[in-house]
Amino acid sequence: MTLELHGLSVTRQNGRNTLRDVSLAVAPGEFIGLIGPNGAGKTTLLRAAQGLLPASGTSSLAALTPGQRARAAAFLPQSREIAWDLTVETLVMLGRTPHRPSAEDAAAVAKAIAQMNLTALAHRRATRLSGGEQARALIARALAQETPLLLADEPIAGLDPAAQIATMQLFAELAREGRAVLASLHDLSLAARHCTRLVVLHEGRLAADGAPQEVLTADLLAEVFHITGRFTETAEGALFTPTGLT
Amino acid sequence: MTAGRLYALLGLLTAALFLASLTVGPASLPIGEALSALVAQSDGPATMVMREIRLPRALLAALIGGSLGLCGAAMQGYLRNPLAEPGLIGVSSTAALGAVIAIQTGLTYTAALALPLMALAGAGLAVLAILALAGPRGTALTLILAGVALSALAGALTSLVLNLSPSPYAAAEIVFWMMGSVADRSMTHVALAAPFILGGMALILPLGRGLDALTLGEDAAASMGTRLTRLRLALILGVAASVGAGTAVAGAIGFVGLVVPHLLRPLTGHRPSTLLIASALGGAAMLLAADTATRLILPARDLKLGVVTALVGAPFFFHLVWRLRGRL
Image (cartoon, rainbow over all chains, first blue to last red; front, top):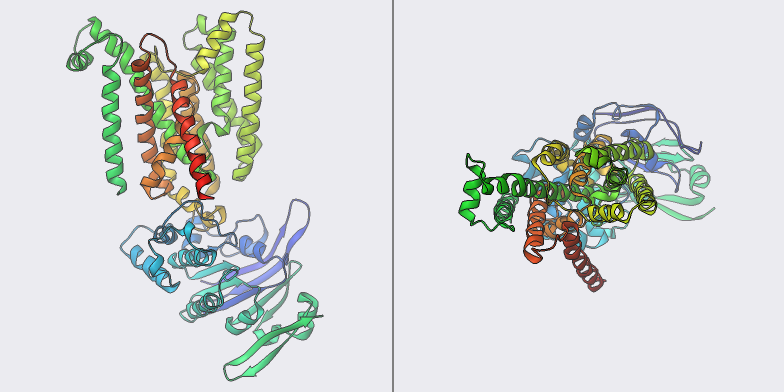
């Protein structure tokens, strides 16, 4: 399915607009990096798109019933809350909540655990694992939901470099398989390297939307992020490096 | 241990304690005689004792203990906090206030059921106040704060009633009632409380999947299809109905809703859904055991059930603190 947002706006109770008139389409096959400085509205966009926040405008996801939505889109929130001492396997099994219990559940859980390289930890208590391992278990939970759309809020924050790259490669692979991924990211280098498209939010507005090299221009970097940076052509493609502050 | 085996074990334990509760009392009846008197077609004294005294007592202990265990597990699951307990939303305090007013005004002497009915009215008012304060879409935090505010107000008003009590006898009766007990209750009490208790439990039991999903927080649960507003409403109504009715007929009985989910959580693999049924059975077993203990420890004195559960529950809390300290 395609996620379509039209004129999505969120006004907080204090009257502050955290999201202003954002229109966006996320189609199967795309891995979209949602970038922007702190407070730009990335989390608000991801939540409002699912109807988790009162918003004006329309979202194809928010229009669904909760059950339909849970089978259409998985969401990885930024807060990595694990309230009880569940094993990794039981935690990942929570991702099957929206589906009718079936024989496919165990296979989906085992696949998601393997994809996040957690097979050796499957029977350990998730709360006893390191922060990065917990984050991977939570990503596995979202993968086990087996939805056409994956929304992830800073999925690679706090992961070690290998897990960051592996997660980005996995999301790119999911997109190539025909799923759609929309992930908020702060690492512009990894975003430019792996995402098919970058969407830039600035003060609640959509500042740019396109291929990484089209989006990360000197003007935009200066205006939105207050940094400089450049693309370097290498044998593995164009790599983006932030170089300093403006 | 699988969930099914755990339920079976706890069910057997509860059944055994139910039978024990029926066979322990000042009228020393042998077990076989006591049980046959219960089902016999006679109006003999043994049948009277069994049907009018022991059966309602055992039924109330099982029903109230079961609902306290279930509500405790559900509240802890919803709030994702092992310190949550059924009284947290202020229902038991307001139900107690209603009962205290019934005793104080003497209504309870003019109409036998005035006390439980006033307590139920108190619980009903508590629900309206909680829903008005915390709102239909509120978060867990607003629910806790509304409950704390309501409990504080009800507690203050209860103190005021005691303070203004004209006679020390009325005050003593209020204090004794508030300690909590299922002794000397009739089948009328059971008939009054059971529909609310069972109805409340029926509202809470289907919430297991949603409570499991809530392990990962409210946003994650909502994204997995949990209707949080509906879950919260069912939880508040279920806890209010069952705990309110329990308080109405037995007074405030603490610690069961807190301790039982704690004890059973490791045996359920820490899954909130499995903990619901386990805690209902465990709560029934614990209250039956505690109520039987009141008759065995001090048979000559009217030892109050709430005193026993607190005496057992508080040291358990010390143990929790001790263990927590060791982990830091």
